[in-house]
Length: 449
Image (tube, rainbow, N blue to C red; front, top):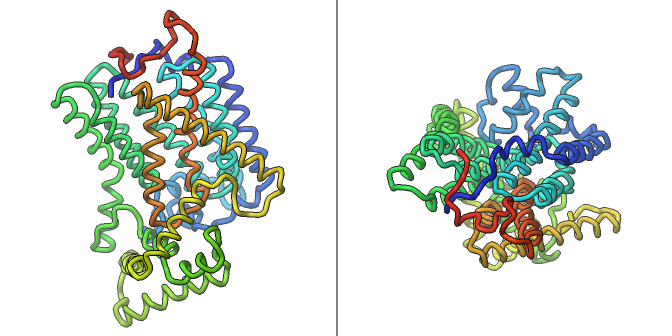
């Protein structure tokens, strides 16, 4: 990939451009309203992230576990300084800061690509007003943090591509590698997409083979600097290689087992688990695990037991897939439909459901138009984050359990692609003499270091 043509002092123009503060204020305000409306949810802990965060803050440990990725609990531990009485307020502030960072980084990425102010405003509004991003800011879950990481990651990739100084490009790829590892340790399915994006951009970067080799080495070094301690820690506690989490086996078994295949066969492809069915599955998995390890768990570390249970769940999932290929295909279709559905399954007023469907239908339609335009122009950098993150996320959830919320971190990538479409439509009919035009983003060999 060639480097995009940039205008001078893009960062200053993003920080001071009229409208930027209004977009930030709008995004933060709607999230603050949502937080106020669902204030009690900030103490709920459906995935035990508060438990891990408190252990980090109070004990300096991660409970000897690798069941949840550590990235978000490390951030969440910052909210524990406020004590039990103030942690609601502290996590609300943390989430608002992360949301503002996601909006700003998206705006900066669009301006770094050389797009005009209307395109930047469109991108900022997409992130500021996205319903999923607004809803999940009220939950102690990974979506808000991962969305911010994706936005900053896209900004850094575009900035490094646009850098003309070889030394700075190498340093930049070190930072990109560190951020990719941080994303992996926050949401592994999204982090894999970040690694894929970096790999494609690196492979297509201009320059000598020596420079590309140095950039690749820098990317790997930056990633290992962040990721390496987690791998070493897990190996010391379990004696096994645990690069990400011990949760993957459960999510694979959750979406691939005989009970679930029967549910989909009997109640349709958009069925959901009933509470009793979910408890039955969990009991079955646990009984099978304990029955196969009778007398073997004495003195084992918690992480070693997690590794064994993870492998057991993968075996259950694999047996279900091999034993019922038709059931697997039906379940895979269910996961993809749920991941990319236009509105959630939960009961909502009809007007709200139609509004959500209209928003996401417009977003998906604009994204398809942007991909088509990029293909016609052979100008792929503005849409590369959406393509690679989207394909990776979709591929992962062909096998693993899926929910609509899991696509939330892709909102900044959608916004950048939509900004590209707005730029192209806005420039149609405008002469190339406009200095801010960026009609040959990837064909120019100019940039700012």
